Image (cartoon, rainbow, N blue to C red; front, side, top):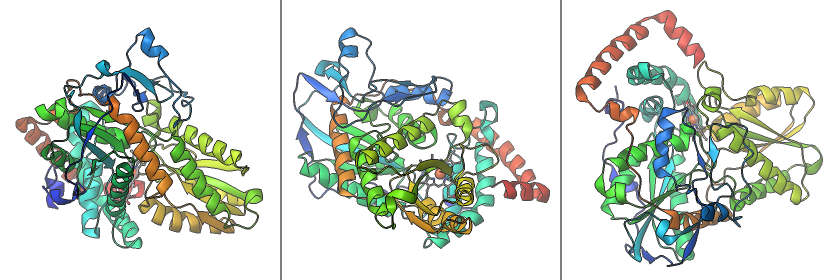
Length: 492
Ligand SMILES: C=CC1=C(C)c2cc3[nH]c(cc4nc(cc5[nH]c(cc1n2)c(C)c5CCC(=O)O)C(CCC(=O)O)=C4C)c(C)c3C=C
Ligand SMILES: [Fe+2]
């Protein structure tokens, strides 16, 4: 078994890459001392139906229920309007993305004009070699935000992660082998971090940019260690997922919250979290630019090309039971992109489907593979695939869309296939992320006291050993059953 898999998901201290080494070590800035500040961040909060999610409130810019502040909500120039939400279990605060706070409302212990600003980019991470695939999968499935077991069965999380990662690894390895033997995520995210740092410098905002991955190197824990070492005085947290999901941004934020609550320096550090940013003008316009450009590659682009948005799925229970805003945000995002395209005279048909489902549960529908077949049967001949839940190329664009779905589409009767590239380091996109950071900065505030999380509950070494012992026996029994193995293999 791999060392990482055994290490209870804690990374080795491979610190050198978690922060982009700053050639100009002095990134202190003076924040404008304005009477009131315009802040953009934290527009949504998940409902209390999900016990793990309620603790996220500690990261939020508070909604202060005073008439002044309610009236202070402005239309922000960089944001489109609020999501039309259908799920009442989560709420939109500061819905236009902008709130007015006077400077005294910012509960920061740091009133110093000199600031050393950090930006922490959160991402998923991916295996860099085929050897990394199984331990990477272990880390992923050991996350209680990815496999959401009822509280009573949480002790099975790690044995189950071990079992599923071993069973899933051969299929995943095939995928990673097909794209060159590993995930490009680390390289691309480092490039984005470097580009963001330069864009912020060009806007006279020198910062240190850190990369924190959830399931592989450089782990979030490493990035936080660097932030502490560098004595950052104000931090903006920017998950590289445009739409918020419990399974992505939510999971990384939970890890951060747990770390920050346990450390006296970090718990006082003013932090601003940009939880979702799909509604930013810069992002929507950058996506529209890519689509417009790719459409030009088709003959008769306006008339016949179906714009096919393919988003990474989540299990239906996340949305319906846990109040994940992901589906609402995704639909709103597509609406905004199409609105932007229409304003440019592009009014092709479009559709949204969800890809990459794993396991036996129901995922968000419609499924990408099923829709492609239906479109082919309906006589659609030209299709432009648009990956929309992630801003870097990764296994699900390079292998699943470019290989599997393309082949399926062509077999189903679609003749002309195109795919929009991921945003990567495109300059309009990076520049807009830089603006998002600048706008979020004044709202930074120290985190409130922590609530215990499922991971903390496992911190007691005796109960941890007992749970691992019984969990491992159970997993061992399961592994010995060939019939069960073949059933599970079919499900994965
Ligand atoms: C917005 C993006 C993503 C959501 C939502 C998401 C949810 C989610 N994913 C899994 C299972 C797997 N994800 C895997 C890899 C992977 N997933 C995303 C993005 C989202 N996941 C990325 C960017 C990557 C990394 C890709 C890379 O290049 O390395 C994998 C491993 C790959 C594979 O075997 O297919 C799994 C497994 C679940 C269960 C889930 C929601 C609950
Ligand atoms: Fe995923």
